[in-house]
Length: 43
Image 1 (cartoon, helix red, strand yellow):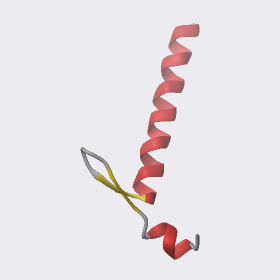
Image 2 (cartoon, rainbow, N blue to C red):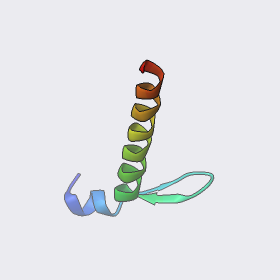
Image 3 (cartoon, rainbow, N blue to C red):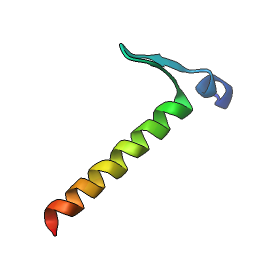
């Protein structure tokens, strides 16, 4: 896909609609949250 096609990609879920940038940002937040949860479990 071209950059323009990627930027115009829309993902619809049952709770919201994401563009690709928002979906990537959302996934990064999830990864960081789980990393913190794992770190708390290992202390």
